[in-house]
Amino acid sequence: VQLQASGGGFVQAGVSLRLSCVVSGINLNNYDMGWYRQAPGKQRELVAGISRDGSTNYADSVKDRFTISRDNAKKTVNLQMNRLKPEDTAVYYCNRKSIVKFLWGQGTLVTVSS
Image (cartoon, rainbow, N blue to C red; front, side, top):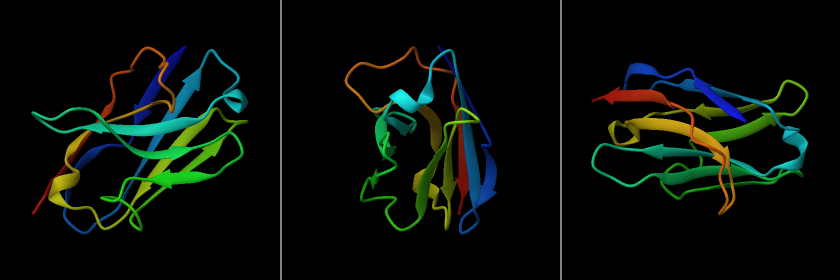
């Protein structure tokens, strides 16, 4: 299984970014997926999840700003991030929304300046 995240960048507060994760080596239909992030000096945290049936859930810190989606045919999981804040600065990763994870990919860095 390979998880290739992209779309990060250096942006100013208030703008939007769209992250994409290409998942190869599995049938994506069979897995609940999530976007995680790890800020400097902090533990990795789940920010958004999407189940096989399309239901979603979000961390309180990103609710109403971030939207997770999936395209099983294209084997992608996306994260639309609006109204970015400096505290959203982190490396973002996608992976299974499960105790059992795939091997982590390299992630994509999002830096938000104030």
